[in-house]
Image (tube, rainbow, N blue to C red; front, side):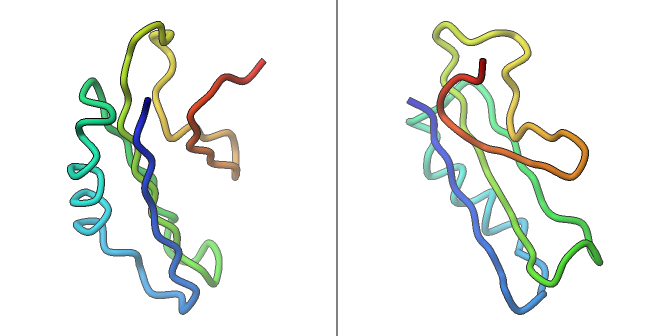
Length: 82
């Protein structure tokens, strides 16, 4: 299993990076092999988002780093996309 955490701030204030990192560290038992983060850039939208991900690499592909980003879309998940 992997570990996923995050925050959404609807007031437009930046999500504290340290808080997301602390939440991710608390999930290290769910995914000790890798961690990844995403923080929405300033001025992009009225809400601010911070995402954290812990990865457990059992059969994962080498390219399975998360959060995944394509253009303006960002995803963090535990599963596979075909």
